[in-house]
Length: 332
Image 1: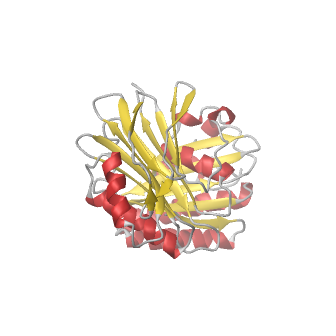
Image 2 (image 1 turned 90 degrees about the vertical axis):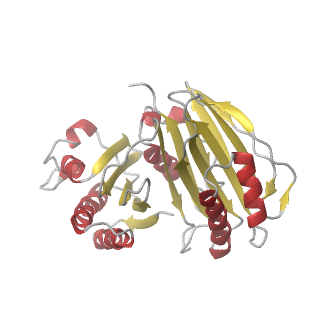
């Protein structure tokens, strides 16, 4: 789950910085990296106050392949950045006043990525890690998961993992919201972590048995091959999964039911997943009417940036909201 700090006025800049430091401590980030994190989060949050409407800082731990770090996403509905390339020049403040600027943030952080549209807003994503993350076999994953307003925990959860055969993406939506839903979602992810090589259909079956003492959940699981341009998908309930390839969208089929309670059928489906293809999975806290036609160039960006844009514009606001994205990179 992302820690979300609304940033509308200057006092919230300090709260974003403090929350980032707390998260750095929780993942045992070294002191130098924690200091860099505090600095770049302060700058990103300050830019939200100066420019944005409905600004948010989203923070999440990074614990992939033994790497410790923090992922930061700044989301806003402001006027957008007219010239992203110019804003990335070192020392160029996005406020037109002395400041670090995005270029300096890029030097202090890593993997900076920006998507901006006039009058719709900007999503800025970067990470601060003790060592660089690596893309495994040309497959990248990212996502955001945000609790319903007023809740301390999210009933949604997602995970991605790589093994010797490929890469697996899991999105779980616990029934309802709050602690009971979170318990169901976390129980499902524990099974996924304990069974890293189970195929999607078998993993859903294992989750179904493990969730009987919970209120239950919907879940979707996809596994994409390392050496072949295909994948396998299985889903139960209302987690939506869509494959995008060459400007075409194909919705993958989930069966009705609730894991842990009533599942009439578990069935896996093959799907094509060549270079450049992208899989988007999201809970029903995100409306399903979006298309990439409204976001020129967005599919080329980091999976977390894609997920954050869809969350910003299509979260329903009355439930937990999760978007996860898996993409096979194009050659070159």
